[in-house]
View 1 (cartoon, rainbow, N blue to C red):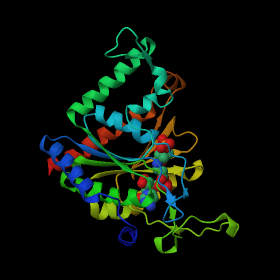
View 2 (tube, rainbow, N blue to C red):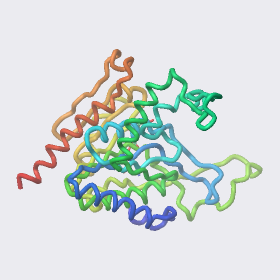
View 3 (tube, protein in one colour):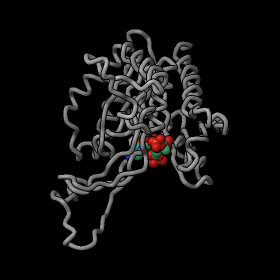
View 4 (tube, rainbow, N blue to C red):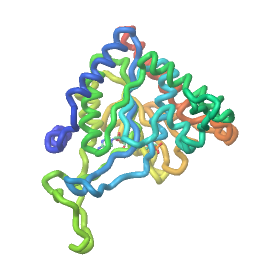
Length: 310
Ligand code: PMT
């Protein structure tokens, strides 16, 4: 099913070049014994026309993926950040609610470098820039961009297979909000759908779940963390357990749409651990991703140590 989807849906541009970049990144960090995590982030678009004017989208802005990436970097991981274009990015996300130009001012007394950061933003920008420059210097972050569902799934396969060589020291953290329905290329109109033709009826097909080949074939030894998003709390844990049973991966991060920034559950076949934020932690600007990543990093260490014992 997954192979059929990938062969029928066109591959992203420069796929071979992207594969080489990811492979180089993985090899470089493997040589120094650094663990590598693939973080997926943001929503996928589902085109309605092959020369796409309109598409179906979803709510995800990529804050989970971008924030988690920063915490994985702090835990010592190298991160492949597979993200939707225009979704939130690590480090830059801290400025997403500001108008960038409002952070700056012109200094008439310094004609050779007249652009300055306003004094009230110095401290915050310095701290963001320091973290960003450290990561850039260490070369521990690789961004890979997608927009459509098909681009995402092709790139997911490429990134996941490149991680195979790391065995247990690779982690996959699948936080992207991936479309479940799409229009197959042979059923898609080429040109812009005309409103003069009246109301639009869409028939969407099911997207095969990529977790299946991912766990069985692409990275069978890696530590795989999927996400389960629901709006009904009564089915959250049972759906997560079903996923673990079906795909045989290590862990599901279960969250509800409305409360996803203050509570999640880490569900394994053996346990269900609540991670919550207090009101004071939230008002101090602390983020739930810090706790999630800390916990996962510890579980991943245990998972890796099995390799060393055998
Ligand atoms: O980005 P934010 O705004 O911060 O929001 C974060 C989030 C709510 C998107 C994130 O925390 C989250 O829950 N992401 C997963 C949402 C989702 O797609 O859930 P799902 O129940 O539809 O899918 C479950 C799993 O199946 C996912 O890990 C997904 O990677 C995987 N999947 C989905 C579709 C598909 N065709 N193949 C898959 O393997």
